Every structure is written in structure tokens, then in C-alpha cells.
Length: 239
Image 1 (cartoon, rainbow, N blue to C red):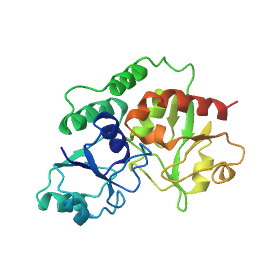
Image 2 (image 1 turned 135 degrees about the vertical axis):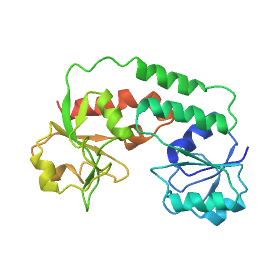
Image 3 (image 1 turned 180 degrees about the horizontal axis):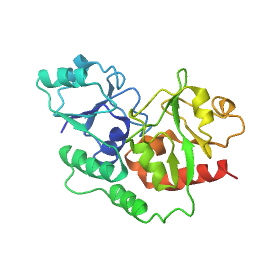
Image 4 (image 1 turned 90 degrees about the horizontal axis):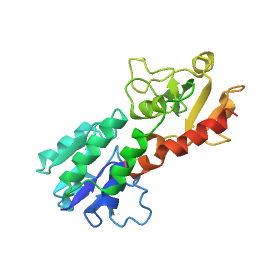
């Protein structure tokens, strides 16, 4: 198999499970760190000509991260494109199994089995907290309805306040975010790189949890440690 991945988390999953299968990946595919493949641009602006030149047997993509016109162009050139949809943790496991099987895996890898066991063993949270979860600023955008990251947080006892919004990633004025009076603000380091000096100052008086975007939004090998890593960051913010 020759596979091109347009999704960083799927890149990591395929690279760890089937070394040597990937021939192309986006510029944002940072894991594994030693991945040596042709880079084909960003998730939103892939170089379709370069992808075609790689002659892949399969291109793996995601309905949220990649643009339909790019995927249509690849299909029109005769390439096979597998598009995933991931809106929650159980769906992530199912889609990962589907992708890996399509890429040539004959059995479920150990890391995927371990990740499922870790999530299945989660105990019921002792208490629940409310949160707003910005993913961008200038303009401010937050998690809305039906998102993988929202489901991850809910399983860890954090209910984000825009889960019922009609949009999946709505733009919400900062004043409105503050007025929502959440128990805490969750600030991931991707897609916008919130840091201790860039983000918390916008929410004076509110606890802010700086969390790993890879553990919050990626579905792949990072799912093995996501509950522990995220829970520690959430607890630290509320001490």
C-alpha cells in the first residue's frame, strides 16, 4: 500500500501501526517526529498535483479538517479517498479501525486496544464543571455542538457551555464568553496556540486550564494517555 494522509492524527495512527505505508502527509503532521515522507501542504490547502504524483493507493481525510473541493479533485483524478467522520470517542475508535484496515492492517494494533481499555475504565467523575473552550482568537471561536473534543471533556466531567449552539465552532464575542460565568476556561495549544501569556489574560478571575491540543483533539495513539494528561491539567487549573 501507498497512503497519503491529510489528517495529522491519522498520520500518527498509520505510521505507528504500519511503518513504511505512508508516502505523503501534510506539513502539520508532526507525529511521529521522525516521519520521513513527502510533504504535500496544509490540511486546508493540499497540493493535489503533488499528491497525484505520489500515485497513492489511498488518500485518507476527514470531513472536518479537509475541504470537499480538494477531495473531489483527487477523486476526479482517479484516486481513492477515504473520508472519516469523528464526533465522539466511540466513533473515533470505529473510524480508526476502518482506516487502519483500509491501509492494510490485518488486526487491531495494541495501542488501539489499550486506548479503548483506558477510556472504558474511566470512573464516573465525582463532580462536574462548566467551561468555555476557545479554539481561536481574533476572532474568538469556541467549541460548539457535536464535537470530538466536547465529548472528550464531557467524559472527564467538564460540560462546555456552547454544546447546544447551532454551529460546531461558533464565533462568540469575548464579553459574552466572560458573561457566561463558566467554572473554568479550557485553552488548548492548537489550532490556536494558547499559552500562559496569550489567552488567560482575557478571562480575569476565571481559572484557566492550558491543555494539550493533541490530547484534546487528536484521535490516534495519543488516546492512550489523553484521559490522564487532560485530567491533570484540568485539576491543576482549579486548585
